[in-house]
Length: 414
Ligand code: CAP
Ligand code: MG
Image (cartoon, rainbow, N blue to C red):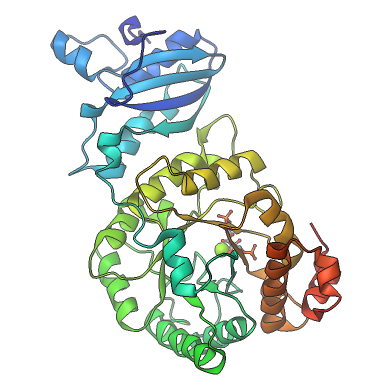
């Protein structure tokens, strides 16, 4: 493969306002300059062999530039004019920064570690409609972390059984609930019936206790129908929507977040991410997906459990995912970071110590697997988050809160 050295601009200053700047980690048996040039070539104006079809001035304006190489990391800058936001959007952005390069023969492994967009591109996106502050306002919860559950089993319950689960969770004090990522409109749990039954359950909790809980209905589906499905769920009383962003696409989140008819916060699940994020040497760092999810309007996003839960992930990377959701360096509302996956009440204080109070912690098995059932598990989670917020040791707090005590005896303290 002949890759042109003309893509090398090592040591030159980078005009950050005119480029999308990417950092790639590269494993190669060739020179790093050759490998880096291969990425810049393939992702902009070149291919595997020298071309004579592009005028020189356009080559210079539109080619990717290898700006730096440090060890196995290389920084590549793509000119803003290589991107098309009115038509293309995030799908086209990903085709440039995370496209063919993963299959390039000169690279044994390559991972997209980070991306920085220029202000001119950031302002073309609206970000979350609600975000951290909007969710807190809906839930009347100005400071404490949000605490939620995922209905388990992830599929199999009827709409009425699901609503019963939600009622018990709400009566136990949870602020959030959600469908699991594989639940949609299966014959045993039609979405419309589920939305109506859950709305009634949430209304019962509120009328009986004054407590506010919202529940994210999974509206993940094909691009041509997701808006219509979301509108119908909203019409029937849904209080939050959920989108599996990697199976649906970032455009699916954006269409719901930007459509004026949708007035509900969007919980973004990242199922399938492990195929791209898990290998520290090949794929895409979750931080990239977190930045894109916030840009397109995700109000809450799964970021991992900071090394404390069941889903494999490095704590420092999960913290970077959280930072991408919360940083003030971009012109958007903040996205609520969600810690989920093997979570149980005994973990909540550790999670708050690591990740802070702007956090949604949620448990599926860690609620429904409680010895006293869903309400007991919900109470244990609510008690644990109260203790964590007050900085009180969970075992100490459990002395006066038996549901938490039973959870700690069953699952321990992280
Ligand atoms: C958690 C969960 C979520 C994971 C996804 C599950 O259930 O519902 O989908 O949180 O992982 O199906 O595993 P449990 P991540 O609480 O029972 O583990 O949040 O890392 O994307
Ligand atoms: Mg799940």
